[in-house]
Length: 349
Image (cartoon, rainbow, N blue to C red):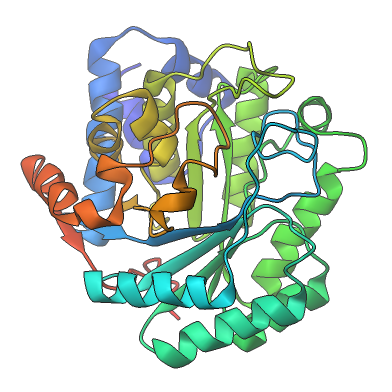
């Protein structure tokens, strides 16, 4: 693909099915270099040479759902379950604040124990203790009134991966009681309420095709999210997909670059999964157009229990205490770690 066609994708913020197929399948070194360089230029134009950090707090690994790919699925009897109490969560935030974090991401399974009142209490206390910080929730599908309550309590952002925008593909990844229609309803409700919204999908998930990825990208363009989280599919041994093939770093990097061209202002993480499959996965993600990393603020005692997939990194680069190491790694590729909230450009709250 000539560089002019990649420039066209960049200028029009759209991609055709054939163009996508070429970019995901080609071995053309020049085309791939052009894709990566254009994505990095766009990210630098919008955000400068800055990488934003978020403090991730994985506060419960109980989940009422039984998604076929997830290690904390309801029917995984081998999972070591835990919940953090409110005081523990607030302590994680206080520790993170001292380390310089100004965004806290509360992530967990869909755990009925954490009622709306409990979530609202946690959010409001974080905002009271740290009024200059943003609070992001990543706790799954809820009724609109629940999302509204969390927002009114002070939540700023909500991350909910759509996983796939293709109806048939969605049904192959999830049990019958879950629906793509409801997942999409949640995302649109969140955006209408006023959240900064994040969606995303696994790269290389079972039954994924060029066509399903194309549908993902068109949905992302339509939704106009503030953040898109993608990472390679990594199987978990205690799931129905335990013996499926891993997604690849190469495909993930290509899609990071494509998404950066399609949604220039988006916050784009170099994910834990990317760091899990390659020692320099996060650095490579940044060079492909990503601009966010999310070190773990969870207590050391539970980090190895929040296993969505096998071999997840929980120490070293993933530990918030190793922020100095993270800064050195980013400086080595010419980027500065920034502790500010880092709102999506053009969508600041």
